[in-house]
Image (cartoon, rainbow, N blue to C red; front, side):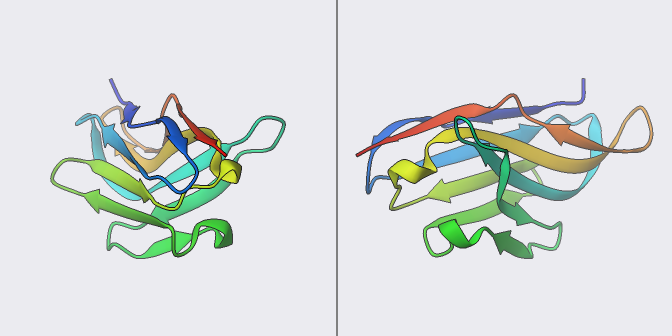
Length: 120
């Protein structure tokens, strides 16, 4: 089954850190871009960070200098290290991957979402 499985969300105080992980199933044969999006209550889903297969990265202005995205291509896994968390970072975080599936063709894959709550 072609899927993304996330882990690492939770509740943390402002100023704390969390690390999110997302593993893509092996049935996703080739992955181009991987990334993280988030959705706060009552708001649209927004980009947090992306990383290309060549490890070029891009970040939302609101997280630059605090978050770091990385990937391990041998494990088909992407990580998001979140430091100096703020209450405004609260939301459901979704993993994303653009990949070539075993059923043929390029697809956009999404994880099920993991909740991050930052208390003030």
